[in-house]
Length: 285
Image (tube, rainbow, N blue to C red; front, top):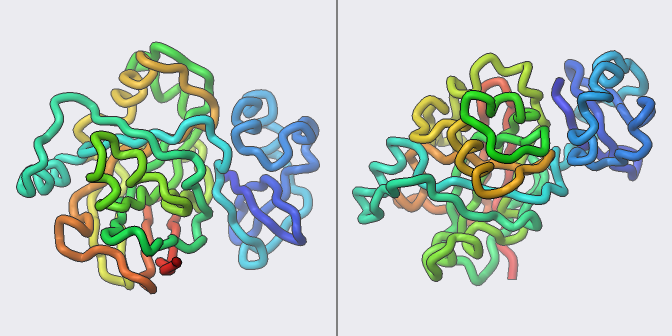
């Protein structure tokens, strides 16, 4: 399934994509306590799944609804740095050492925005950058998961852009501030459930700015694959349904090629099988 959060007629709800239409799932038995929270739905998905897949109720044209962030209320939004071989090499060439272990940081959940919402360029930010990443969404509460078992705890996947204020990122030993400005976490366009993706480690990723391709790579270029990531993180913390893991970006980031984002730029991030998100950069005070 492709699960969406969408707004129509002044109300936000959860639905599923069916061709060019969105089927409203709010009338499904058991959804009343879920509301428009994908996190709540994922926690109850095993019990609700058959009914959701069968539902053929009220539908809206995709063109008539506003797609919202598929998961807007995760408890955690974690991202890994320098996890693609080519990106690690371009960083090394710029004097950034390749880490000897997985390098994780936090994006504050308040940065999350919709798949077609604008990206804010605040006046206090001088170096705004893009980073296309495969987003993995956790589906089961879990701890101490072995890599061999990790796929069983994945609910699905989405497209993420780990928008980064490079100047703020470099001001402190942790990346959090530079990664967490409001609107700097566009995700979507929907949550594609794991069963629809044959191999999440063989997906083409393309990010373009104003139609110019800047990043192009497959997810197979990861240094630590998504299963190793889940094993590593769950050794430290309990992962919860709805938690988002941004799994690394390929080479071609703006800071490396000398093409940072400017007011008016349109950034499109697309991943094979998952759709695309597109966001315009808008300067603000």
